[in-house]
Figure 1 (cartoon, helix red, strand yellow):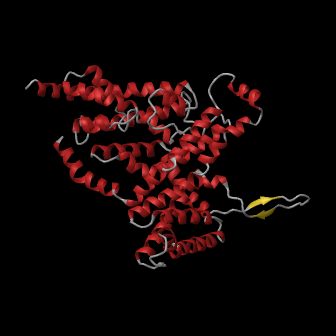
Figure 2: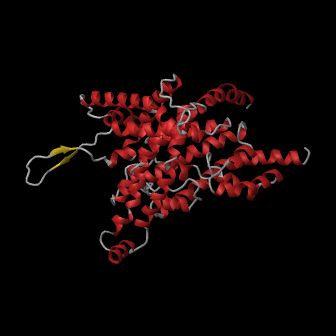
Figure 3: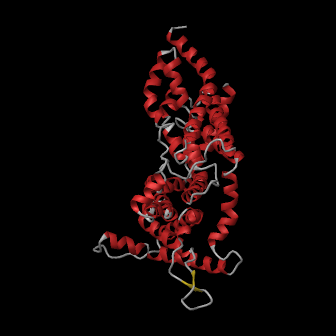
Length: 437
């Protein structure tokens, strides 16, 4: 056990600490978080449009007219379909903050550069014409959402790196001191913004003369598809969950660190399922989405520790574990596990690290089997908040399917069985300490 602790302290923790402090990963994580409130709002309207109540669809059609469902889903498009725009602004803003340069200008330049990298032309068949002509001015909504997410991320980081480099080299316009600060700051961004736009413009022209046609196609083929395969596979998901748990075992926020890389992949999968669900598809395309992990794997937080909290309330002998169970039940019910992770503690505790890693890995497998075989409905692309309590969260995430709630209950039982023997050993040790033995 001591050797294992030494490895964590001397090998894993220094490397993980450097990764956790990497500014680009932090900016990716924080920028994507900016999209979450809008996506959750859109998900509320998506739920209202497809309530799992017998006869609800007929009621909606007969009461409000044929177009009511379309009108009810307007907010869904206004939230999900601007995901890339918001993320591009947020990532650039947070990265500029890391460099201590004006973040608002960095975000605005990033959005402009992203739109420049996106082809606007659409086919239009004029009245009486036989051939379609290309016209400009139509922003493709699909590329403003999850399909354009990877391009928005890359453009945000590229534009901000150019922007901060020019500013730090002091190649900017300086206005007199009497000019209002807001105006002065906007002119400071003039030269860096022009250089960013010029670079992205040249990239777009070069790519248009290749078989890829647009930057979106390049990123989709060379980055999006490989990452999608990794994030959408059982092996890739197990590796991601293992890394999350290993980082938490060292006291680092594993979900934030790994989420900076895998979050965009799972978010794009969520939106693909949302589109299929909205169109009434019988089979949804993805199993591994953000809700797969947030609601079905991390029941009680990273490590699926809610079963451990209940165990403390029902089976603990030591006063320390009983008291911790009472304190941690409320947060654990809403998937917040810091009281357990640091209070038990699990961090740097060789005995409890074993089930802490093993439990979520096990329910990744059980959840995958249940959904891939059709026993349980796949996540419907509804962005249920990660703080949603068990049973309710599974029901909503699967589009109102009772199988989602039952799977959460089953996963809770699996984690209870995995944690129990380790908890009993730890509880006996604490009880003996309290008795003075």
